[in-house]
Image (tube, rainbow, N blue to C red; front, side, top):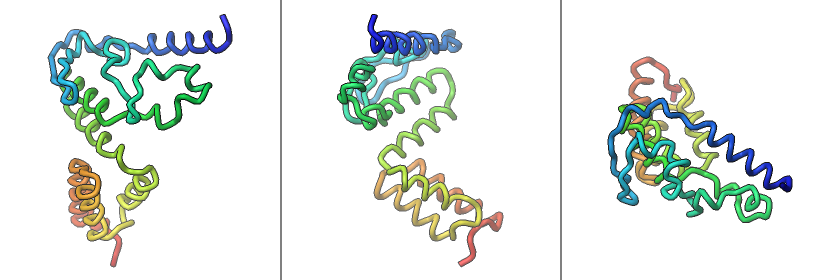
Length: 174
């Protein structure tokens, strides 16, 4: 076996060993909004192992396309291995299927952030630190998230933070 094939096989074995069946007693179907596929948390989790055909990257690569050989020959770029909003939604629906609603909400919040550049996310993160922004600056960020990125969950979070910071005197002075 050549070196590349051996590394690829080790990666596959590691991924298979990470499988967690701790939720296997819970079985609830949920609808995957993008494809209409029925997902059963017991039968289909983990998705990468049991339903890989549903997982696609933002560049529309299939999970099976992401191999060590394709990475080494340049067919797979860093943009090809990012998670897509659809995959996060699918994972959120699986989480709901096992009554993990808070985790599902976090996945949906993350899904909204995919369209935003890493640099802008860091700027927003820093703006949300106590005493770093005025209330109006936070409200402007919330409007940007909602209007420019359609990130309503995150925009509501920033608006809520602005209100809490105001009550606790944690806003930057004008």
